[in-house]
Image (cartoon, rainbow, N blue to C red; front, side):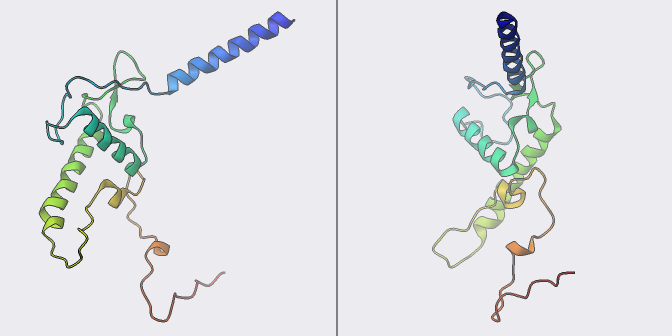
Length: 156
């Protein structure tokens, strides 16, 4: 009876361990040379690109597989150079757009503050969501009023 129970427990532990491996993403080791870099300067290092990708993940509230395709040989691994996922091209366009906004518009705005102007980032619109909301959250954007805050809406 004891042997049977031990065998069942061992089997369950093995199943859970294998299942958790199949759902986790295997850490990608840095390549010697980056491949298929289109929106970043070719001179960027793996570490610099990886840092930017971490910023994108947080700004959009996603993981790497949101834009990167899986390898054909080993499903949990990602093929970073592969362009099969159409979201990767959208991300590239967004990178170019924010760069243009900052270089062509934000950098040319005249201002009197000693602090530099805040730049446009992914988080400016996305705020931790894969798709930016087009709705204004009034609690975050109350207009200034010398009489104080407006009264709360009536309850029904």
